[in-house]
Length: 631
Ligand code: GTP
Ligand code: SPV
Ligand code: MN
Image (spheres, protein in one colour):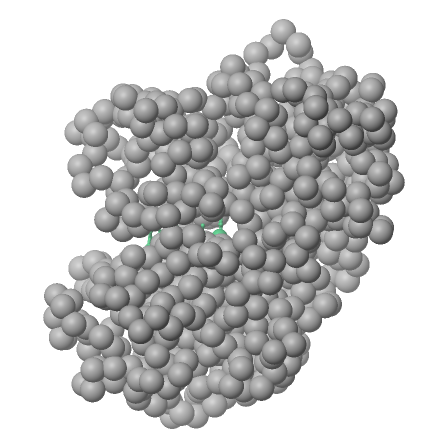
């Protein structure tokens, strides 16, 4: 107890955290936490996973320094040139561990039907047994880190607490960037009545049984990976991977899969959405949330530099939104994360200067290339590639005879949100921001227009439910393959997708029509016959955002089409001033061809078949109505 008091008052010099031999873990835990639930849970896994040491995290600078030094010594992190990228490091993963593994991701609830047709399911008891088998002695020779964190501002009624056990120091320091990790979150757990938190167990599955053998810079289990969720007990168990959403359990596992089931029970929304603030030239500000599938433009849209004069975008979050209706009848959103885990390739001063600003310092890069002067590089970062770099596979790479990209297509940067040059003043506020518009969007080379508006909340829910997108490198699988990805939640919904649609319909009944956010659909990724993007995208997307902004107050026109409301280009509804674009291209970007759309609707009908009778009537009605408008 004295120890704890001293630590909190900062009286213990450099070492505020606790790092002890495993046999001393029990006593250390007693000093660290008053939560019986936390203590006994950690003790159980110390006994079972048999780490050599146990490290109880406090999220301090001294802890960060200690852990980073250790990772640099082991070759896990390479310090970047401090004159180019102060406080920043490069990590290069194992080739067998480069993205989320959806095939090995499971929702384990009592009834298979509750996981629904879009999730892998296993009986919770069976899966736990399998996981406990894998966890047996899995941390031998390693340190177990215990990581308390808050998703959302510490103490906000919209936030939630978690604790991750892991044997990856890379995961710990990534969590330090991506969440509010450390003492403040632990204090919340200690003072909450039931010590309530979401327990997440994680191991890379690579015990160091031979003390003489050299450790790999990126230890993981190349063959066996399991990412498992137990919504009924609100717990997470992950094994084998140290990459992104597989391992940083606060992100997809908690803030989406577990949180979506909590949200369903408690009447709120946990969504794969960015949140941005947009101010028009008159100084009116609104907030917008947008769901695009992985690697389909959320980070870019969230930090966009509008090309339209007088317009300003500020960033609240780039990946996840937790949203609730408040007493005033409006929907409020918080970003549960504290950092950005962004896609590197394609990010440049031209496409996303604000993201480039976020990662100027204190950033962990993973699987990008390293330049000769100790900085980072990836495809698309500069117009011309440097003549030679060290690629993500640690090989010499030469621009003039390169057969493969220097950076992995799913290479990423992890940077603190507070470093974003256009971070919104309310991003860290416990009360959240009021949402006026929700935008859905996928990566579609054909059919879907640049932007259109739904006819109302239920139709908007239908647009989300029918979202399709071409797959990206964010998940293991075939890049470019079309798949149904409702609301960008196909890989992240912790329960039956059909019930999730119904939950959205029900949410629309919680407030009056005029207070509900207006729902839109966008597609930046239409391609021409040569396979080139037809719309310039990025900052030019401000033209679309302006139309969305003005539509929320009916300040701009639209034309009523069978699929929804589109800007009437002939009447100038979409501001194309100063944009060098062919009028035939614009026409095509907004064409609603009935026969194409009849086939599109047919695809929706096909995709809905997996839900059988559980597809909500309201959604079925929207499909029927679309087809009759197209007839
Ligand atoms: P996750 O972090 O995986 O959830 O991805 P995300 O949705 O945040 O996607 P991100 O903004 O990182 O963009 C992914 C890729 O799409 C990058 O290579 C971008 O350069 C590219 N991209 C983003 N916006 C646009 C756009 O408006 N037009 C085009 N053509 N490409 C874009
Ligand atoms: C995504 O795939 O949507 C991501 C990256 O945001 S990961 O954290 O790996 O899930
Ligand atoms: Mn994402």
